Amino acid sequence: MNLHACLTDARRYERQIERLHQKYLATRRLYELQQSDVSLASFVLNRSAVARKLACTVGNGDYRLLPAHVRTITTDGKQRIVFAYRLTDLLVHGVVAGVLDAALTPTLSASLYSYRKGVSWWMAISAFAAYVRTHRKDQPEVRRRGLYVIRRDIDSYTDSIPVGPTSPVWDMLRGLLRTFDDGRSLAPAHWQLLQTVVRPEAFVTPGQLFTQYRGVPTGQPISCVLFNLYLSELDAQLDRIPGAFYARYCDDLVFAHPDPDIVRAADGRIRETLSALALELNEGKSRTLYLTGAGRQSSAWPEARGTTEVPLLGCLVSAQGTVSLSRKKRRRFLADIEDRAFGTARALQTRDPAVAGRTICSVINRALEPKLEFSQQRSAALLRRAVTDRDDLKQLDYCIARIVLRAITGQRGAQAFRTIPYRKMRHEWRLLSLLQARNKWPKRAGSDLRRAT
Image 1: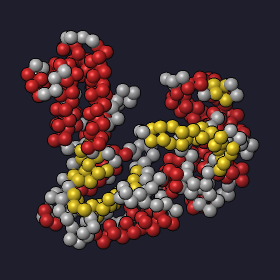
Image 2: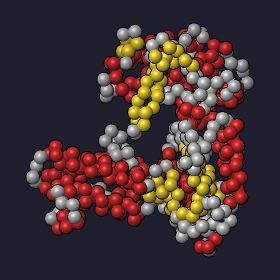
Image 3: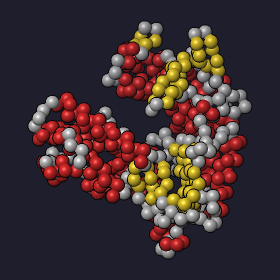
Image 4: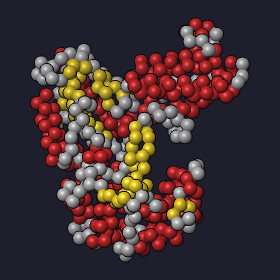
């Protein structure tokens, strides 16, 4: 395979059309997204012809990407700038990003858990928990147990990656494509297309055009490829350190080892590499920890704060190697379950507790099922696949049952269980138990996690 063959493959463009089709299938955007008065729905109906035409134009070097339009959206309470393109440009962006991702994937470290097919963020949590359990097993003497853990976060990673003419990213991309193309030189038109995808022109206001020299085009698939590529050499270096644990999810890094000198050296390497790449750490989010069962302080590295658990990607990994939800994610989880339960109770408008109970429990069960993507709760997959702290799951079961009781009876205290017994919710109304669901999780999930570690 080579770049030219990939860019002229009509099937890749068809897959991008289908991807947009699936993304907007249940929304009005299927008809609202238009180019020259031709909607995305028309693109879908004529996908083969559109794909062939695009592949031919790109292959000849005649395709030109138009400037994007900058828009501001709000996600999770934060304002983010995204780049909006015409439909054909979206398809070309997707194909170029897909080609680069195919070239990059075989070179990536196994310790990278972000934006990779078949690799999920919860695998990083499970891998770190397995590393902690292995350390406990290798150190039967309690006083000798202890892991030094550094958590590092890159400051504004999305907006900080340099893409100007002197950026290291261009040499990275040339080297990547040279390997992909078996050493063949790139066609000038294809290199120019790739440059425009990575560093697009955009309209800030009508008629005012600018070129971004720092930051990647947010909202486009090329951004995820660049997130993985830009720190890939650092991933490889830290992954090769014997006896250590390293994981990265985009801009979030964690490194652990029983020897404080090795961890200090790794921290120095991280800082040195980021400085060379014109990136900075977010010191406010950086953590230097000493993980033990008692949370004691380290005499070998006093700056490492003693702790019994390490926060990682919305979870807490304990010194025993168990995983629980972080306090923030736990509050969000229960608030979401409460909204669903009370919303269902209001919609039913029935005084029959049995009818209300069965319906509310059914709604909650669907929210906790990780395979039902449209109705699932955001933490559903995490609770089923990564959280292993049985006490935490048992407490969550109890809190969910209390929410169901309040939604039906309006009573806040535990005395409501005298009206509706806990057993009734479990056996008659079939309210899912997170603890039992976790205990019944298939063995193949465990084998997947072992392969990931």
